[in-house]
Amino acid sequence: MNEPAYFSFTANEQRFSINAAYVEAVFALPDIILLPEAAPDIVGALNLRGELIPILDLNISLGRAAADYQVSDSLIVLNQNQLRAGVIASTIHELEAGAVAATLAEATGSFGQLKRKHLIAGLAQDDAQTIVLAGPDRWLQYVEVQQVISMASLLGQSPADEADEADEARSQRPTFLPEASATDRLILQQRAGQLRQPLQRPTTEALKTLSVVMLGGQRFGIDLTLVQEFVEASNLTPVPCCPETIVGNLNLRGDVLTVVDIRSLLDLPIAPPAAKAQIIVVEVDAIAAGIVVEQILDSMFLLNQQAIVPVERTASRAQAQYLEGMATYEGSLIGLLNLPKLIAQGNLIVDEVV
Image (cartoon, rainbow, N blue to C red; front, side, top):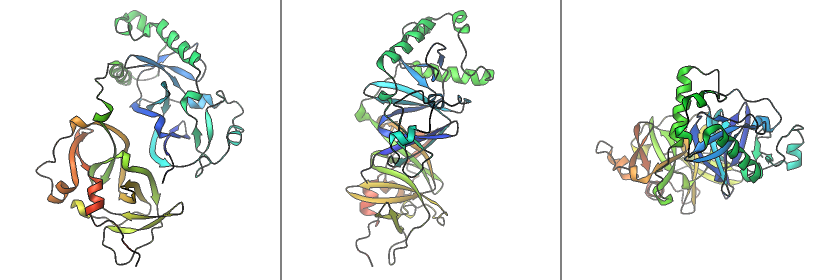
């Protein structure tokens, strides 16, 4: 249960994975400052809250063709030892536990045109097609980052003077996604404008990271600090003489994990288990359990705890008992599950094997 969590994503049909500790934020793809004179795999730069950061196309870094970017893509901001870089992804996947199987030499051997020597850590243990990335401070040298900042600044994009740049000068710059429609271009520019704005950043203590899941057709948030990994399972072993909340046991890399269904505790309808159940593995007070969910909507949602509101009066008594509050997610309220209370009081622990 002590394996690090990995953040997975796809870029141009290639799946990548990186230690989740390096992931600072994930945004909808914004407009990017193109830098024609930078290294081929550096697409450009982004002004993020007053700091210019390089944006990479990992497929070019691997010696492959550039991705066909879409407005629906995402930008992943990585941070290690204060070195920040962004990568463009077409699909964001769930957090997962894992380990590197292939050695660095074995992994890089198949990439003869590898542009960045220290980009790859290896290949995923459970999926040899998934490239495990090294920490971002091994990709870029300090001098290269400074060159990116200088180039972007020369294009009139330094954080200090960007707002004063003349429309004429802006129109002469190379355009990111030149084939985008006028509507999509406006969306890209609005996103970039929002990311440029100084953030009234709450203290670290004021932030809460959630996994947002679907249970009984409703959305709920789970404290991500309690989440170990996300898995899919089809072979659960039933446990006799247990309450309906106990779905069965799962052999998870040699560890026997009790899988539970908390929907009945929340007064939610229980549906028959899917052929492949989606399970969130959590650990509370040294007790590990798997929670069956219908869908994982967001694996890393940052919430300002000051935005948490009391549970609505319309919530059922059961939900009010096991919720620690509510918050807005994508325009609607979600319940924030009190997992320690659920685990302790919800009859979710198998005390003995029958």
